[in-house]
Length: 436
Image (cartoon, rainbow, N blue to C red; front, side, top):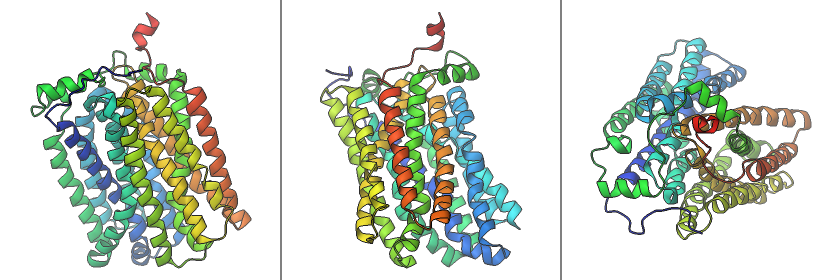
């Protein structure tokens, strides 16, 4: 059956796709700021005379503020809107990088990385909320995939570019460069981003097309922030989505933090060869994110297939495919290992934009930011747990096999929460109407 009242004829205007591209560019800038410390770590160790344990402490500083702030920034987004919160956020991206460039010791750098966690906390919940405003339901997945795939693609381009900056400008100069990039993006975002009702360049025809297709209603929530948070935390859909997505996040974090180390330690590759192998699964993940998690879902919904069945089928199929991660833990052949990893990461990438499209689809009015914050908070917890658990398993067993199997078991739990606990993709009743 059809799932939307979307008009058949698409409008002349393409303003909504410019907004989606803008959000994707922001994620790329975001990830440049995140990965630079990883690349610059050897130079910083030499200059400050610090050991690897201290560097590990600095690498973790970002997560100390990023994760705990997900729910508060979701509430702020629902109270003050995407534009205001993101303008403050982007300025802080640049300030955090510039403060890091001027660091006089480990303490200063630790504070700067915590500031970056604060600064970047709104990015993904804000993007999910903005896509809800700007896109009809039948285009929501591909629009979401543009910013989600940017996170995958950043793993391909950011590290080599940042490495060149460090080589030619030094680590302090590299931080200045990424800070400057954030400031440039601030002016671009300030000039281009408005919510649809305030955008003077959005044509009436395109606006009607977006609204008729089921765009999220603009405006603040009818109930207060903490009241809304308590209400949403009492709903089954939010827990199903959040825990399901957190299980995806465990496997994703496992790949981000441990893939290069796995190839070097377990597969006995040199650093250069491992870097080349690492690019392969992330490239495939980018393509899968865009064309399966994005384009294919929208295409099927546009053709009239049941929206809940389509989105949940892609999420579940992606996470089931992600179970190929277990295969990598059972082989000692690097080519088979990278094949299993590529299959797994491609499946997970397909599930990601489908998951990120859900907050704006199930939220009551003004609640998409809060749901996105809850979802990404849970995701950040498993993002912290995955590298720690993997490190413990490798240290105690001397192999990655158990870590791969654990990641597969976590994914299986996520499949249960997405399929059984979350239920159908329908809007959660407004809290005031629910209690009336």
